[in-house]
Length: 207
Picture 1 (spheres, rainbow, N blue to C red):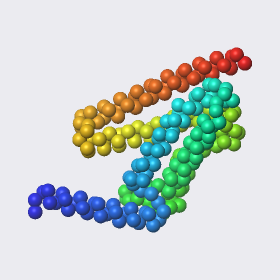
Picture 2 (picture 1 turned 90 degrees about the horizontal axis):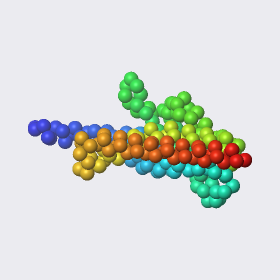
Picture 3 (picture 1 turned 135 degrees about the vertical axis):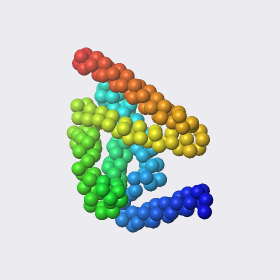
Picture 4 (picture 1 turned 180 degrees about the horizontal axis):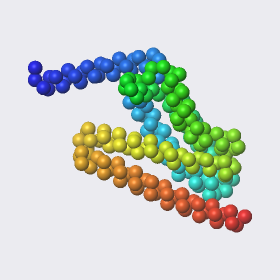
């Protein structure tokens, strides 16, 4: 049996194991971290978080009353997206550090989320909802959505890897493209926040 046949058999075996794992975790109401559904959700989530990262400094810099109601409705919708993400992350399994097997106990998965990102997610979401969106000091907690840029960087790397598989990007340019995109995006966001900060300082000094 030649080397290509062995690789094919090994690949088919891995695919069968992954399919079996996916069926098992679907029954347990847990989501595998590499599932296609979670990848598509990550794209949706990062798009909405980018909108929020650009929109939040505008809301703080300008008078809240001057913004149309549909922008506040969009902001509330983004809060709903983040709440949905919190639920999904609480049922997304992970590999155990020693055995490297996926955790299949749902309470362990939820407990890991409680010990990890829950505090940051609540800090971003709760203050502006409890103390009303139009209080700029509590609304400023939403600026912590900057922390979600690390998820965007991982998503960009995955998307560029897909382009490489489709022969649209060379192997040597894969890392360069993702790094340049994130550098340009972060630079633009920093300049955007600086401009909005100057506007906010100007408006508050006039009051």
